[in-house]
Image 1 (tube, rainbow, N blue to C red):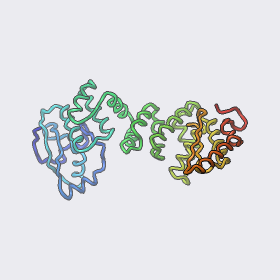
Image 2 (cartoon, one colour):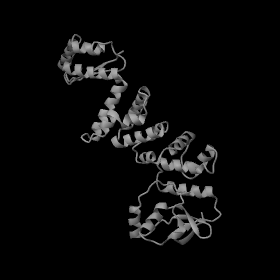
Image 3 (spheres, helix red, strand yellow):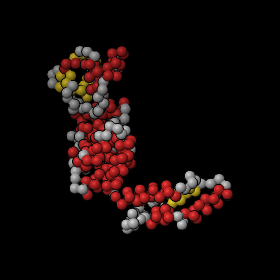
Image 4 (cartoon, rainbow, N blue to C red):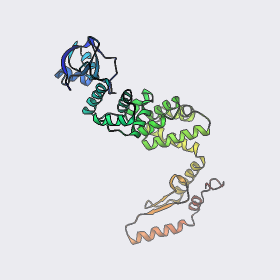
Length: 328
């Protein structure tokens, strides 16, 4: 690539033209300090527009930093005026890829902009490979869906508050619900598995109760927990998850309480672990014993034998809830 190195007046550079912008990184304080101390090491790349103006190809933050510290001109690399736009875009993407790994939103932006010049995904995959983007059809489809989300949700994807799998689920919701769920996750910072669990529960509850997801998690008891200033984030998350499970699966919730109550009443030694079926579904319980000697083993076996006649143990196995029908 043949560049023309030139000193350019900042007033001639259109910083509002984002045609080739890929980066989502916004703060420029660190760059400003660096430029002030040691100068501009890597000059930005510009494309000429008209007789005297310039469009930024690469270096949006560097140019913003120079303007912030009061520079009136800077050294830049100027592209040929007859260079094709697809190749200018490819250069912009490649320049970013060479300096760091693009986040998901930046990749989504790159795909959207490449799509203005390349109609077929096969062409996008092939061209992307040349400029350092590793793509496939499924990933391209996901990036397109990601790019349809609001800026606030995209920001949370960038910050890793919302993983890609959750963001794609939010894409299926109405706008208000997607925004409220994203805000909810930003407030409480649940893990990926917790986000999956919560999203499934609120979707099912909203359908059962004929309410919007936004209304469900913004008002009522859930809204009250979210707004309780006496609870920290982990306490709020724990209570809301328990509440959602109780409302969605009341029978299972009741059995969970029954199991905990009876397990406590059994007063099992700490070396005997009694576990219910996964998610309290089915009838397969498990008992694990830990021992260091034959004598200790025999003691535990005696405890297990006595359990067979213990009322609290029998009540657990029968899965009866307050003398009602069994859970399963």
